[in-house]
Image (cartoon, rainbow, N blue to C red; front, side):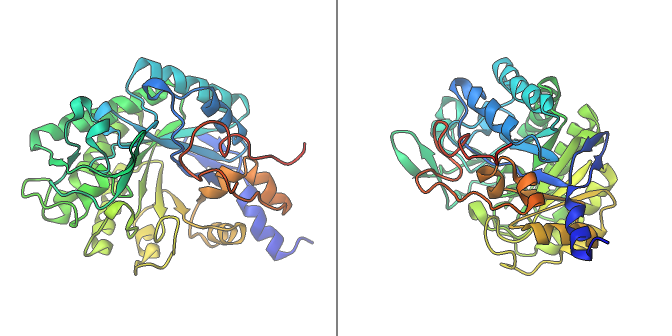
Length: 369
C-alpha cells in the first residue's frame, strides 16, 4: 500500500480542470520576464523553443506582455498590440500545443516602472500619481538607470487603458493562447492604483479602498466581457514590496478586491505570498482569510518546494502551485519532481531573468529520455 507521503506528493501530478481546459498536472510555470523579444518587441524563434521545452507543466503563464506601446518599462519585453507581435506569439502557442501543453499570457502595463526612453515620443510614464518609484530599469548603452518621474493619469484617460487590456486579451486569443492573466501585482500600473503608497488621487480612482480598486476591477470586467471568465485569471501580491510598492493596510484592501473578484469569478486568482522571490513572512497577512472569500481556483506562489506544494494541494490551501526560478533552470521540472531527480543549478555566468541569446534561456538541460 502506498505511503501517505507518496499519496500526498502524488497530488501535485494529477490532472486538473481549469475552466474549459484540462491541465496535465497541478504545476504552473509562473510568468517570468526574460527580455528576449526581438525587434518590434516580437517573440522570436528562441522564445518558441523556450516555452515548448516547458510544455510538460500543467499550465504555462507566459511572461508579462505589454498591452500597448505606453505599457513598456523594460528592454526587449514582448507586446500583444501589433499584428507582428500576435503572429510571433502564435508560433509560441502552436509549439506548446503541439507538445500537449496549455498556455496563458500575462498582460501588463508597467505604469511608473518605466523610463522616458521606452515611452512613445519619450513622454513621461503614467501612474496614479506623479510619484517616482525608487527603482531602476535597464537601458542599452546606459545600463541601469532610475525610473523616470511619471505623470498622473487624467481621469478621462483611464477608459482607454481599460480598452487596451480588452484589445490585448482579444489579441491573445487570436494568437492561440488558452487564456490571459491580468497583472495586478508588483507595483505595476493596476497594483500602483490599489496602494495608498503610490495612489494619492482625489478622483473616483483614489482615496477609499473602493475607489483605488476600481481600475483593476474595470479591467477585469472588460477582459472577462471580451473573452469570457473561463479564460481570465488575475495575479495579486498583497504584501510584496518589490518595485517600491507600499500599502498601509493590505488586509482590508485585498479582502475587498477578492470579494469583488468573486462576483466576476475569473478562472483563477494567483497570489504571491510574502516578498516576491524572498521571505514568505516579510509582513503579517492572513492568506487563509483571503482564500475563504473566493470560491474558484486558487493558485499559490513564492518559493514552493515539492513538499510544500503537495501539502498545499492536499490541505486545500491551494488548487494550483506556480513555480518561477525552478522553471527557468529546469525545463522538465514536473518530471524531475515526480522522479525525485536533482534540479539544475543556476548557471553562474548567466543572469536569472534578463539576458541575451540562448545561454541561460534555452540551454538548461532536460533529463535523458
